[in-house]
Length: 289
Image (cartoon, rainbow, N blue to C red; front, side):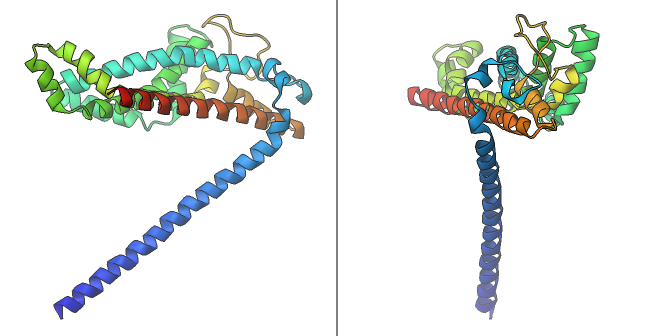
C-alpha cells in the first residue's frame, strides 16, 4: 500500500514537472517569436535608410536629410565619461566590501542599500541628477551632468557583479599569497583582481550596455532632442541616440518611423558589439589564468 502511494506521488510530481516544463518552454518561445518579429520589422523599415548620409548628417525636419551624427557623438561622450567612473568607483567599493569591511551592522546596511539601489527605476536617478548635478552643483544641462547621472544608475549593478566575481576567488589563493609574505594589498592587486577580472569586466560592460539605451534619466537632466553641432567639451549641451530615436518615433510623418528604425539598428549594433567585446575579454583573461 505504501509503495503504491509512493508511486502515485512520484507520478504526480513527474506530471507537474512536465506541465511546468511545457509552460516555461512556451513562455520562452513566445518571447523569442515576439523578438524575432520586432527585429524583422525594424530591419525591414530601417535598412534602406541606413547609409553614409544618415551617419554623417545632423537631425532635420525633413526625413530624407535626417541623420544621427550629433546623437552618436553625444552617446560616445557619455560612455567615455561614465565607463571609467563606474569601473573605478564600483570595483573599489567591491574590494572594500569583500576584502576589508568586517561583518558589522554598518556593512550589512550598505550591502542591503546597494542591492536595493540596483532595482530603483531609472527615472528616480534622473530626478536625483537634476537636483544634485544640474541645480545644486550648477553643472547645467551638460554632458557631464548626464554622465554622472548614468554613473549613479549603473554603479550598484557593477558593485554587485564585481563582488560576485571577487567571491569566486578561492580563499586558498589568498592564503598562499600570505604564506609567501605578501600583504593584503599585494594579495588583492596580484592575486584576487587578476583572477576576478574576467567576471568584473563582463559585468561592467554589460552594465554599460544598459546605460547606453536609457532614455528617462537623460530627458530629466536636460538632453535635448535637436542638436546641430558636435559637443566639444563635457560642459556642452548634448543629445543621445535613445533621445533622438524617441523624437523621430513621435513625429507624425510616416518616413520618420523608418528613420527611427535605422537609429535602432545602429544602437543594436553598438550594444551587440559591447556584449561581444565583453565575451572576448572574459575568454581572453580566462585563458591566461
